[in-house]
Length: 373
Image 1 (cartoon, one colour):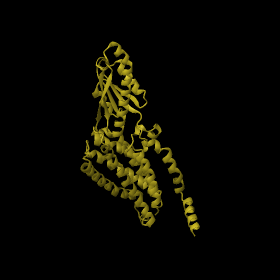
Image 2: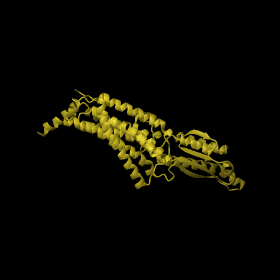
Image 3: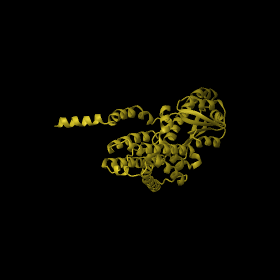
Image 4: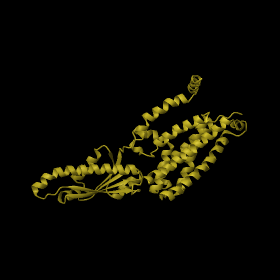
């Protein structure tokens, strides 16, 4: 009897139109793509340099930093306020400030100061990038000490060059990881809640047969999909409001920007994930199938959204894939509003992307719903 039961289970799996494909495709995706996307190594940190000294030593130090392979020189500014604009426009992650008299102080006094300002909206990237930069600068100081040791001994001055680094973290001065992760977790909460529930709701009606009663009514497909969206749209607002309260009470975390901006984006994002959940439900015949498909996509969404690791640390092809990842844009918005105080005018690219996703998924949900009269 046991042999026949096992044979029956294998036949059911083999005859299913989706599960055999999922069994092979999901492990391939996890093993071939996600280890690259979820890498904790920080690469290609964008660097802005303010070189007020314009000396041989300052040029050598900048060249050593760029040639390390971890940094890209994306901006050279004349003043520190000008360099801050590159942080605001997301073209730079770190600022290296070399003051006037850098080479003179090294040669005469044996010490000089440089300042490193890090964009700590992404605390991981800001902290690790600063550590990399500090290590390279200290290594450069060691080279100078070796070069100047003989000269200093011969001249009798005994001065050995040293460089002191003064770090400054923008937007998240204490590099508190909770400040970085909590706004993003609100996005994941909305993705799970407003994505899974609509998908499972429709499929449960299919399994119970109650959806057949709806199909014989004159209700249009658009009205049916809209009726499914509105309840979860309101549920998303309630869940987000609760998250705001917990962030304030538990973590003492308040947005630097306007909550109205967050709610404006949330109203669109909930339509995106709910529409996607309805698309999945239209192609699913059982709750198990809907859950597997949703979990498959949600895992990809989470790991490739910048939740844990910076997007710029991913390979170029992985960054290209994140362009079609809706949570990526909402997470960017949440961190910019919570940590930087960005206004709606600063978030037009993210708003446009989410609006396009909302229209696309909901139209797909309407046209893919099979209504039989």
